[in-house]
Length: 150
Image (cartoon, rainbow, N blue to C red; front, side, top):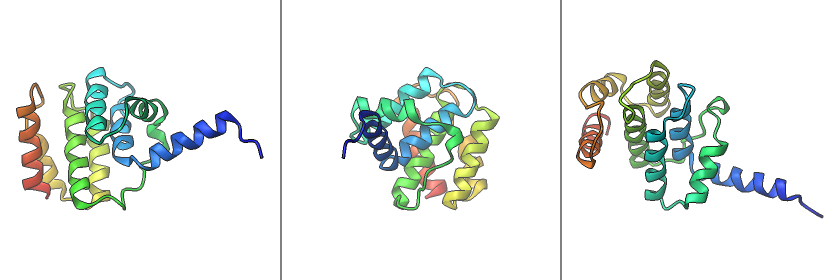
């Protein structure tokens, strides 16, 4: 049986997407406002590298993710991974200095899917900076997320 190269590439992309719902969801968030800001994509690349993904795999996820495709299953994510996902969603939402209505709704949909408290999420979003400039700003958001959502 001969399998086409295109079919193999599609299967490979599908495997990468299934094994990385976290990054797929972050890319969907970046796309939700109709454009992917370069600062959002750079943050997503950094997150992908921290998850030990190759640059090629990260680029495949970015290139093949479609926010109209629906949110992938998160049922296999640990509580720690879910908290990390929500923290990273907030970081991606805030990294360009603008919180779009569609981004906020996407986060609320994820909050509902995960089962976190919406009031805690609102407090987290409103009590942290929109102007993320340093690792210190990122750590403040991570710490507050752990306290409010964890």
